[in-house]
Image (cartoon, rainbow, N blue to C red; front, side, top):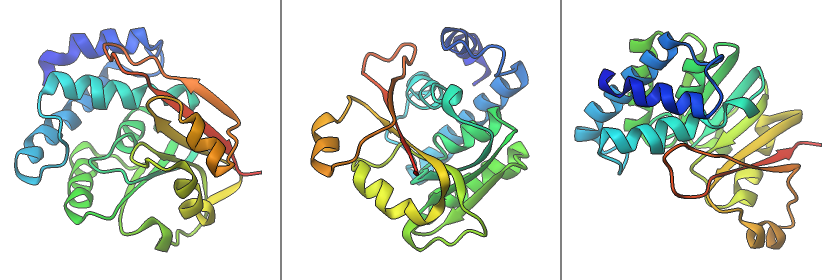
Amino acid sequence: MIHLLPQLTAGIEALGLQSVVTTEMQEQCLAYLALLEKWNKVYNLTAVRDPQDMLVLHLLDSLSVLPYIQSGSLLDVGSGGGLPGLVVAITRPDVQVTTIDTVQKKAIFMRQVKAELGLSNAQVVHGRVEAYKPPSPFTQVISRAFSDIALFKQLTTHLIAPHGRWLAMKGVVPTDELQQAGVFPKEVIRLPVPHLQAERHLIVFENT
């Protein structure tokens, strides 16, 4: 995976994150990607198979939200193979990251990544988000997996701190969906992911 370092570095520069993501963090991101590719052959963690595509669709896509993540605690709901949660844990040591997924093999994989990369600021939970009872609420709840924003908010309301923020990673802005659900975002941020032809947006809500 180290052969992808020049592309990752260029992508990070395009995102304006060169002062945030150190060379050591970039190497850890690629070590994570190598584990994802290796485990994917057996566990089928992601439909994306090609390392080059993984770099863009998984790594750079996850890194694109970094400027909008505040220090404190972050819950990544339906994290799958750890996206974006484990990428945030690697690149933002000031954030306490918890990832949760209902699929056991995905939780096992994420625990393996945490152990191999020594991510002391990451915690992995296997279970259903609506049944999860953490010791304290999170300042931010993010998801890349939820298609329905209203359901995402509804299932995680008990997990978010007062004045905490929901961060929903989406493709095209789901204007109709938001209007029908009667949920109004604080802001909609376009995420310019390098080498990705599709639109990406971050929909931000505040727990007022």
